[in-house]
Length: 274
Image (tube, rainbow, N blue to C red; front, side, top):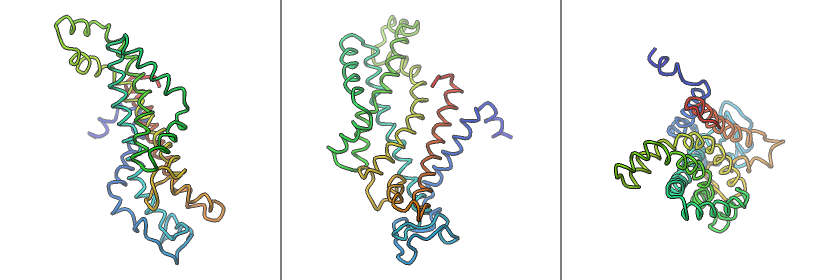
């Protein structure tokens, strides 16, 4: 009854999305208990085995259990979705706050940097940065931070430009409060609602980009279990062993669907237009 009262006013999209994300988090945390096999253990006698009681999701061309690799891959892909959003969020929030609050030369320089970054396609710029830094998750996070902060900065900047003219901001200035206190204690908390909602939608893009980068061999490196790598490895066996690419592909879709539902539900609950 208590749980029912707490969820009574919650949008259905938010509730379903939260349940989906909670399920993925549980699988990631309990991976050693949930996975029936070692994700990198190779069994030559069970190569390309179809789904069965022993291997519910089948095995790949190395005899590795697909279910175990999907379960362990949940840890990696959740990490990609979360960390790939946090770094751009923090950088973009700081840059957008400073630009919107001070205006003038600071804002002009900020907009020129934004124009330069937006002049290049998002994925192409990411691939260029990763190619320079070398493959791996660290390079992916750096590339996301260098490219993805722009959207958050523009959102925060637009809100700060409006809020700095509000009555409470003028009252804070008249009381002699410092710039840092006005920005981070009065303006920013009121400007972050839209960015928080956007971050949940952005997590979908980050997840898909992470899978795409791994698919191209520039992200997570084998034999680590990661859904994008598994899809790439199963591409050559689509007609003969469809399960190799299908189950990690479904996992990507379900996790992205969970983030999308949470974003829609938060937007509905907080009154933010997507």
